[in-house]
Image (cartoon, rainbow, N blue to C red; front, side, top):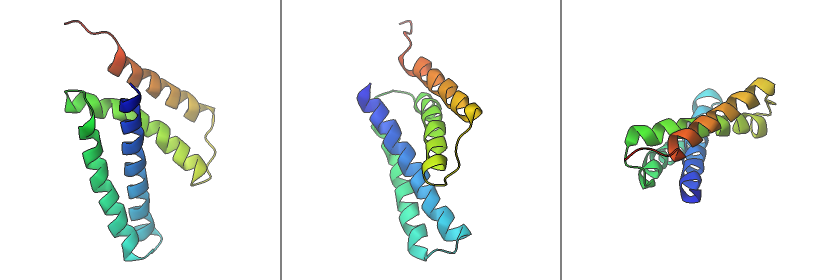
Amino acid sequence: MIFALALFLLAGLAEIGGGYLVWLWLKDARPLWFGVVGSLILVAYGIIPTLQSFPSFGHVYAAYGGVFIVLAVLWGWLVDRKTPDLHDWIGAAVCIAGVSIMLWAPRPG
């Protein structure tokens, strides 16, 4: 369970961090290397989820979506300095609850 969570966190940081560098390159006229490094990080993001032990691509990405939402809220707070409101936190908690149910609920057979 800890390994799965660590991979989700790593994938989220790669997706958000890589996307952020590309964003800065295109939106804030940062140097080309921001876009190149961001793109390489996004390639790594595409590889990281394949290290999960869950057998289904759709299952892994659906669960990862909830983790991504929480990380995006935290990124906005810590990097963009946009303080999340109560609804952001409630929504993030609902997503994590959903991810937990999807990944670790007992299943028949």
